[in-house]
Length: 162
Image (cartoon, rainbow, N blue to C red; front, side, top):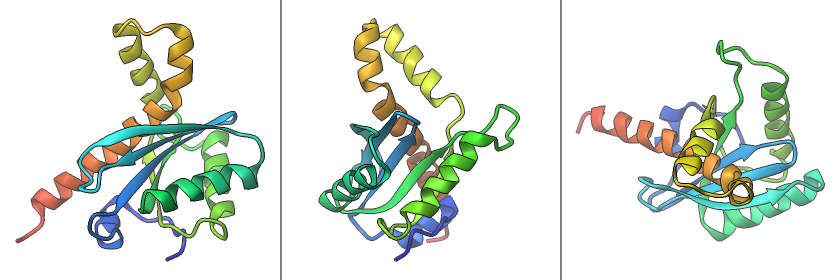
């Protein structure tokens, strides 16, 4: 299986039974990660990788994907508010092209607009300190992104003929 970019609807055909999806919130300084459960219903924050060097970052990503039996990556695509793609989106697409030889998993992009803002707002409402928020926000944003795909997959599954 190669790291080809696929539509959300195709994930159903590409992910094996009892295999997980991994959510990725790609930032310039960190990479937030989240995992689905094996039934692909709930996204849980996993880890925040402090970015050091591309190869080391991808090695950590690949090690976690292997450890947790991940069959596909869901990567947040940072679109502009009007839905267009800017430099951050292009950087994310470049990252995906570069990981192909190192991490041959299908990739699904998911609109990540306002994900960090929504997570931050939720943490503030829970009275989480600023220091703790900065520690967890990236992996929680990855879970927020991944949960959007899991909800969409469940909706697609509910509508498919039996």
